[in-house]
Amino acid sequence: MKLLVIARPITFHGGVERATAGLLGGLVERGDAVHLLSPGPDPRLPGVTHHSLAVPPAPPPLRPLVFASAVRLARGRSWDVVQSHERTLGQDVYRAGEGCHRAWLAARGRRGRGVYNAVVLALERQVFARTPRIVAIARLGKTEIERLYGVEPARVRVIYNGVDHGRFERAARERRAARAAAEIAEDRTALLFVGSGFERKGLATAIEALARLPDDARLIVIGKGDIAPYHARAERLGVAKRVVWLGARPDVERWYAAADAVVLPTTYEPFGNVHLEALASGVPIVTTSRAGGAEIVTDQCGAIVEPGDAGAVAAAVERLRAQDRAGLAGACRAAAAPYTHAAQAAAFHALYRGASG
Image 1 (cartoon, rainbow, N blue to C red):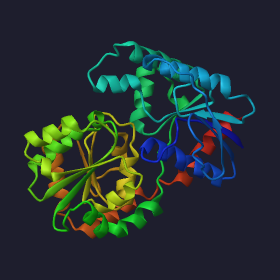
Image 2: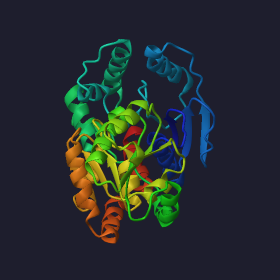
Image 3: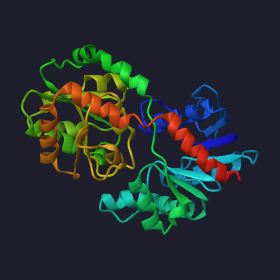
């Protein structure tokens, strides 16, 4: 099958981009001719043919519309299936990896004021109205798409992300070296926060939870963003010396190995590969009811709390660190086991058979 996938530039410090790369690899392994249309340099994914997308410069509020127009002009017509991971028009399949902008605004208590939000909402409305097949990456997203945009359930399929289990299982053996690199002694509790977009992903809550934990707890923060307000919050709470700021890292698997628990107290997260990466590493995760990834988390491998509840995050961490570490790691890996790139690619293929027919 000849597939064209439309996506943002693929880098390897972001969960969205890693998820796309994994899916493309799974499709290649099935024997598909996979083509990627994206801005930026060729990411050189094995078996994937890259087509560079030229996007004209535009003011920030209009960039989503300009991107969609550039895709429409560049994609051509010689494909069995066109699949977009971005808000574009004319594709056979739209993968709603970022969920609903409308739902995200609601989670922030905003009504979509401003030109940028108006453009994205208008484009999103057209995407959901005109795309024959829509893929949500969790049941939470499927429900939002159907409820907020009146999309009939038959058009929306849930296909969960996959994860490279070998990558994270191999890294888990380097726990001692990773903790030494972060200057965290073996007898201390290491929490890990992974994610760019600190406000949405709940870094403030993670820092507040750290302040409620014993002095031996440390918080490692990985991701892009302005750390100044969060560092100031940590100073006010008296925990600044207990936070390790690592920035964006391509070797994120190493830091899962260093962690005793991952904390992602997000206000809105369509899925978040952090959930799968943590569990594949044998590390429990504390997340929220507003994360699609919470659908794979049980009491045996983590905890689900409400957004903004730092006390609940701290209590969950205390419960998890009191458990047998080896048994907890086994339960985490078992929870992640069904979620592979091969399984994800197979689910998309089942969808393509209808899309290309």
